[in-house]
Image (tube, rainbow, N blue to C red; front, side, top):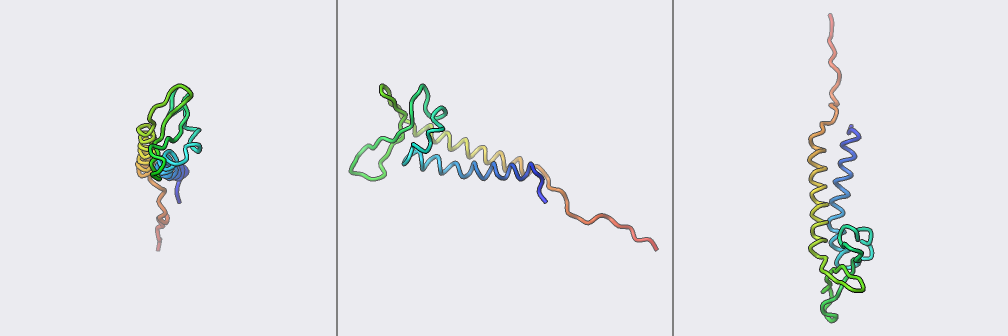
Length: 113
């Protein structure tokens, strides 16, 4: 039987591992889904968006942080957020392995004759 901290760390690790491909895929294809990460990825009131380099080439998107006056690349920041999620997963699973589950052995019985 698992203890509550082991179960919590397992779910934190699972969610962090799920976040890695989601951040990368959504960041390059559909950045509106990542608007909650705007304060982390884009600074100074910029919003995450996708700019197409060549309209004739499919999947040639580039994530950018833009506003009416400024634009800057956001792909390196997306990679950093994905790497941080991977590190959170590694830390959660490492801490989980250090918490030992309760042993399920039967209690010691002494037979008397």
